[in-house]
Image (cartoon, rainbow, N blue to C red; front, side, top):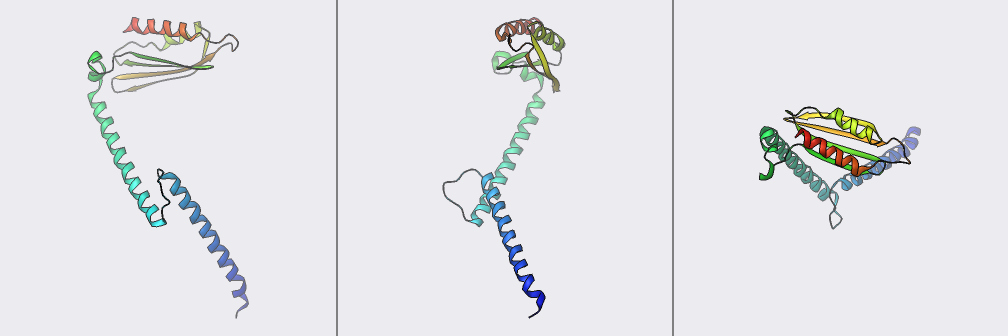
Length: 173
């Protein structure tokens, strides 16, 4: 027996123990990513289920990409359909989240910009714009504005802001 063998064996055992702990943690993490199943799966069954789940997700992602491409190709034609089932532009959505007010507006690219007018209405009604973004996708422009009450004690009159913004949007429609 070599003197080095006695110290290397416990070290190998410790390394093997740590490897098994890491593998258990990885298997547990993998099992948490798979949709719940009724029974506990063995390791090979778990790996098979994970593989098939990844394939299903890839297939679903590909379908969503194809659908997005189709919607982009359709462009503004379907957006302007109106009562026949499409989206009538402009679309205004206002969400009151307590101290924060979210304003989302979708307009056609051929419409004049209402961004600064929306800012004016919000400021006149006592809201302070926290963040705002504007993005163009195809023939549509998406506006998102987040604001909060300028004076927390007074708050924001959401109904009045909604009324004024709807009048503004319909004026530009």
